[in-house]
Amino acid sequence: MKRTFIAIKVEAGDETSGAFGIMKDSLKDSSVRWADIYKMHVTLAFLGDTSEDTIKEVSNMLRQICAKVNRFEFRISGLGFFRSLNDARVIWAGIENSEKLSDLFSIIKSGLDGLGVDTEEREFRPHLTLGRLKRIKNKHTLEELFSRYGDYKFQDVNVAEVIYYESILQPSGSVYLPIKTFRLS
Image (cartoon, rainbow, N blue to C red):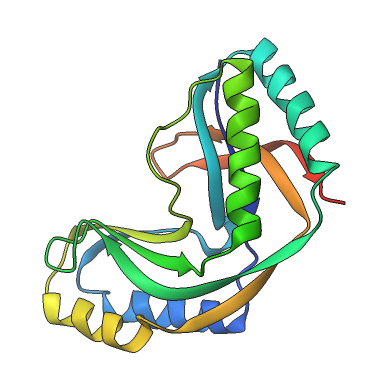
Protein backbone atom coordinates (compact mmCIF):
# COMPACT_ATOMS: atom_id res chain seq x y z
CA MET A 1 0.00 0.00 0.00
CA LYS A 2 1.14 3.49 -0.85
CA ARG A 3 -0.31 6.75 0.45
CA THR A 4 -1.27 8.62 -2.72
CA PHE A 5 -2.77 11.83 -4.03
CA ILE A 6 -3.36 13.59 -7.35
CA ALA A 7 -2.14 17.17 -7.75
CA ILE A 8 -0.92 20.02 -9.89
CA LYS A 9 2.65 21.05 -9.08
CA VAL A 10 3.18 24.78 -8.62
CA GLU A 11 6.56 26.34 -9.35
CA ALA A 12 6.77 29.39 -7.09
CA GLY A 13 7.54 32.55 -9.03
CA ASP A 14 9.44 35.57 -7.73
CA GLU A 15 6.34 37.26 -6.25
CA THR A 16 5.24 34.11 -4.43
CA SER A 17 8.76 33.32 -3.20
CA GLY A 18 9.26 36.89 -1.95
CA ALA A 19 5.92 37.00 -0.14
CA PHE A 20 6.55 33.55 1.36
CA GLY A 21 9.91 34.76 2.70
CA ILE A 22 8.29 37.85 4.26
CA MET A 23 5.64 35.67 5.92
CA LYS A 24 8.25 33.31 7.33
CA ASP A 25 10.30 36.23 8.63
CA SER A 26 7.22 37.91 10.15
CA LEU A 27 6.30 34.75 12.05
CA LYS A 28 9.82 33.65 13.01
CA ASP A 29 8.99 33.93 16.73
CA SER A 30 5.96 31.67 16.34
CA SER A 31 5.81 27.92 15.91
CA VAL A 32 4.95 27.26 12.27
CA ARG A 33 5.72 24.18 10.20
CA TRP A 34 6.29 25.82 6.82
CA ALA A 35 5.65 24.11 3.51
CA ASP A 36 8.64 23.48 1.31
CA ILE A 37 8.39 26.07 -1.47
CA TYR A 38 9.77 23.48 -3.91
CA LYS A 39 6.99 20.97 -3.11
CA MET A 40 3.99 23.28 -3.50
CA HIS A 41 0.97 21.81 -5.22
CA VAL A 42 -2.79 22.07 -5.54
CA THR A 43 -4.33 18.78 -4.42
CA LEU A 44 -7.10 17.51 -6.69
CA ALA A 45 -7.76 14.27 -4.79
CA PHE A 46 -6.28 12.58 -1.73
CA LEU A 47 -6.62 8.81 -2.01
CA GLY A 48 -4.78 7.72 1.13
CA ASP A 49 -3.54 4.13 1.36
CA THR A 50 -3.78 2.70 -2.15
CA SER A 51 -3.05 -0.84 -3.41
CA GLU A 52 -0.81 -1.46 -6.42
CA ASP A 53 -3.81 -2.67 -8.46
CA THR A 54 -5.73 0.53 -7.68
CA ILE A 55 -2.68 2.64 -8.53
CA LYS A 56 -2.63 1.01 -11.98
CA GLU A 57 -6.38 1.61 -12.47
CA VAL A 58 -6.11 5.24 -11.35
CA SER A 59 -3.08 5.79 -13.60
CA ASN A 60 -4.96 4.42 -16.60
CA MET A 61 -7.98 6.62 -15.81
CA LEU A 62 -5.77 9.73 -15.45
CA ARG A 63 -4.00 8.98 -18.74
CA GLN A 64 -7.34 8.84 -20.54
CA ILE A 65 -8.71 11.98 -18.88
CA CYS A 66 -5.61 14.13 -19.26
CA ALA A 67 -5.31 13.28 -22.96
CA LYS A 68 -8.68 15.02 -23.47
CA VAL A 69 -8.09 18.11 -21.29
CA ASN A 70 -6.47 21.22 -22.74
CA ARG A 71 -3.77 23.13 -20.92
CA PHE A 72 -5.02 26.09 -18.92
CA GLU A 73 -4.02 28.74 -16.37
CA PHE A 74 -5.17 29.75 -12.94
CA ARG A 75 -4.14 32.55 -10.60
CA ILE A 76 -2.83 32.26 -7.06
CA SER A 77 -4.42 35.15 -5.24
CA GLY A 78 -5.11 36.13 -1.65
CA LEU A 79 -4.12 34.82 1.74
CA GLY A 80 -6.38 32.99 4.15
CA PHE A 81 -6.50 30.77 7.19
CA PHE A 82 -8.27 27.51 7.90
CA ARG A 83 -10.49 27.78 10.92
CA SER A 84 -10.37 31.57 11.28
CA LEU A 85 -7.98 34.46 11.74
CA ASN A 86 -8.52 34.24 15.51
CA ASP A 87 -8.00 30.46 15.62
CA ALA A 88 -5.74 29.91 12.61
CA ARG A 89 -4.34 26.42 12.07
CA VAL A 90 -3.26 26.63 8.42
CA ILE A 91 -2.03 29.59 6.35
CA TRP A 92 -2.88 29.24 2.67
CA ALA A 93 -2.72 31.14 -0.59
CA GLY A 94 -5.97 31.03 -2.53
CA ILE A 95 -6.79 30.14 -6.09
CA GLU A 96 -9.04 32.55 -7.98
CA ASN A 97 -12.21 30.99 -9.33
CA SER A 98 -11.11 28.83 -12.23
CA GLU A 99 -13.80 27.02 -14.14
CA LYS A 100 -11.21 24.88 -15.91
CA LEU A 101 -9.59 23.82 -12.61
CA SER A 102 -13.01 23.01 -11.14
CA ASP A 103 -13.90 21.04 -14.28
CA LEU A 104 -10.65 19.05 -14.07
CA PHE A 105 -11.37 18.26 -10.42
CA SER A 106 -14.93 17.13 -11.27
CA ILE A 107 -13.78 14.90 -14.13
CA ILE A 108 -11.10 13.26 -11.97
CA LYS A 109 -13.52 12.86 -9.04
CA SER A 110 -16.05 11.23 -11.35
CA GLY A 111 -13.37 8.90 -12.71
CA LEU A 112 -12.31 7.90 -9.19
CA ASP A 113 -15.94 7.33 -8.20
CA GLY A 114 -16.34 5.12 -11.28
CA LEU A 115 -13.41 3.01 -10.09
CA GLY A 116 -14.89 2.77 -6.60
CA VAL A 117 -11.99 4.74 -5.11
CA ASP A 118 -12.93 6.60 -1.94
CA THR A 119 -11.80 10.21 -1.66
CA GLU A 120 -12.48 13.00 0.79
CA GLU A 121 -16.07 14.19 0.55
CA ARG A 122 -15.47 17.84 1.39
CA GLU A 123 -16.07 20.73 -0.97
CA PHE A 124 -13.24 21.42 -3.44
CA ARG A 125 -11.44 24.50 -2.14
CA PRO A 126 -8.23 24.75 -4.17
CA HIS A 127 -5.36 26.39 -2.29
CA LEU A 128 -1.64 26.22 -1.61
CA THR A 129 -0.82 25.30 1.97
CA LEU A 130 1.94 27.65 3.12
CA GLY A 131 2.25 26.65 6.75
CA ARG A 132 0.67 24.83 9.67
CA LEU A 133 0.43 26.91 12.82
CA LYS A 134 1.25 25.33 16.14
CA ARG A 135 1.63 28.45 18.26
CA ILE A 136 1.35 32.13 17.39
CA LYS A 137 3.29 34.54 19.54
CA ASN A 138 1.46 37.64 18.31
CA LYS A 139 -1.92 37.36 16.54
CA HIS A 140 -1.52 40.96 15.41
CA THR A 141 1.19 39.71 13.03
CA LEU A 142 -1.38 37.45 11.32
CA GLU A 143 -3.72 40.43 10.97
CA GLU A 144 -0.92 42.44 9.35
CA LEU A 145 -0.13 39.60 6.93
CA PHE A 146 -3.81 39.25 6.04
CA SER A 147 -4.07 43.00 5.51
CA ARG A 148 -1.02 42.96 3.24
CA TYR A 149 -1.74 39.74 1.29
CA GLY A 150 -5.50 39.16 1.65
CA ASP A 151 -6.14 40.27 -1.94
CA TYR A 152 -2.60 39.97 -3.27
CA LYS A 153 -2.10 38.56 -6.78
CA PHE A 154 0.83 36.18 -6.29
CA GLN A 155 1.20 34.64 -9.75
CA ASP A 156 -0.42 32.87 -12.67
CA VAL A 157 0.17 29.14 -13.03
CA ASN A 158 0.31 27.37 -16.39
CA VAL A 159 -1.15 23.89 -16.01
CA ALA A 160 0.36 21.46 -18.48
CA GLU A 161 0.28 18.26 -16.43
CA VAL A 162 -1.31 16.39 -13.57
CA ILE A 163 0.90 14.35 -11.25
CA TYR A 164 -0.06 11.22 -9.35
CA TYR A 165 2.08 11.23 -6.20
CA GLU A 166 3.09 8.90 -3.43
CA SER A 167 3.39 10.68 -0.08
CA ILE A 168 5.86 9.18 2.38
CA LEU A 169 5.52 10.48 5.93
CA GLN A 170 8.81 11.16 7.71
CA PRO A 171 9.66 13.01 10.93
CA SER A 172 11.26 15.80 8.89
CA GLY A 173 8.12 16.19 6.74
CA SER A 174 6.41 14.44 3.86
CA VAL A 175 8.35 13.31 0.83
CA TYR A 176 6.38 13.44 -2.44
CA LEU A 177 7.44 11.00 -5.12
CA PRO A 178 5.78 11.19 -8.54
CA ILE A 179 4.26 7.84 -9.47
CA LYS A 180 3.36 9.08 -12.94
CA THR A 181 2.98 12.40 -14.74
CA PHE A 182 0.14 12.98 -17.21
CA ARG A 183 0.50 15.70 -19.85
CA LEU A 184 -2.54 17.73 -20.80
CA SER A 185 -3.26 18.18 -24.50
